Image (cartoon, rainbow over all chains, first blue to last red; front, side):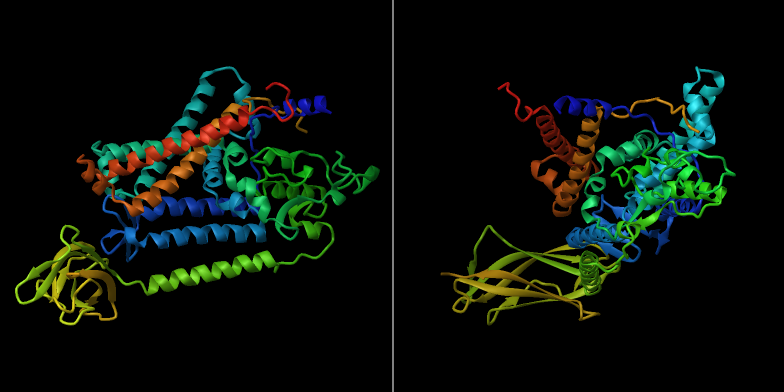
Length: 458
Length: 93
């Protein structure tokens, strides 16, 4: 038993470089479309403008995120966290429903690998040409092909890195700086860093990333059930497999519909054989579906020997779309999205921080009054200057004598306001809870209350 | 049809797998850590407290790579310990 086991472990390593073969078909077109769309979005979005500035700019140096007309501050971090939770839940939801759609069509690893394979095909030719080229001894033509591939890959990677940086620094400035060779150190560093990551991931690591590095690929099966959409080979119909003449009658020699042409294996970007059943390496790109359909067409057999289906459908049971887990995911998603939308819609674009002066508890002044000092930080999150009124309450006779009325805060900036409060000594003994209320004068629905303490003699 | 399956570059060895996994997983961890940390703290203020003048960009980068160093160390250590652990039932002590 143990000897046998040791042998299995050794065999595990006997794998080879995958040369995905090109194929045309419904799902390949769909995936090309998705690739173009997603790449178009990635490379295009930083160039969009809104009100004279970049529409989507995660301005880290200024600690502000601009999304169209909305400006988010570090204080809005809960929104980002909520957004990430929603993204994760959506992934679970779609996985339960439709399997690894994400992997096959939307994952950046897949999308950029597609783009890199396309460049590879452009310079080195088809699958068999590429295999031959790699086997061939070094020659001028081989060097030329390899060099042009590298040129395309590296240029594309650097452009990718530059675009990535363009989400954090205004991309037009980055481009001008790059063109005039006056680019800043960090900009250059992150461009090269991200470019290199793209180059390595999409050019060389490819399916190894999915196999060895991707956590989702490992745990996605936990979200699967027998009604999840998977890509499956119809074993009952296909077996026993065997080659035959194209003109041979269907079912000759008792053979199933699989003609064992290996096309499904050749097109697979992760290099697996879908006929061995569902494997965790399968990223559900459906290239094998297209490959098999094209063969079935040639043989005049019905399509769908390899197809999108569910475990239940293959074994002749009906498929249920509404299952408890799908419903629960959907409910949670709806709830979270509704929560995010309402809290964004009702978000007050003012932030008020009250910091009590820690150096002195209180100061007694003439007229039987006690004084406390505070620093107010007023943040105006709007993209225009606003005027605010600040009131204090909580103790009878509490008054603020040095708050300017109105308090003007410039667009998207922070105003630091030292404030001195005084209250009659006899009513303000001990620790009192007080409140600061800030109201936007032009839009009184924007109002905020912040609690603090007022300390008097004990 | 395809009998000459080309055996070219080998796929990753166990060591390559381990290194790639550690680098990647620790990168993800560092990215999350950096995001949360700098949402709460402004690097400019942190360095001002220490009395060092540093731009925010440098602060972020330094923070990110510090996070990455720590996460890579822990994840590398974990991977190493798991991989070099004595086999269950092995007699050597």
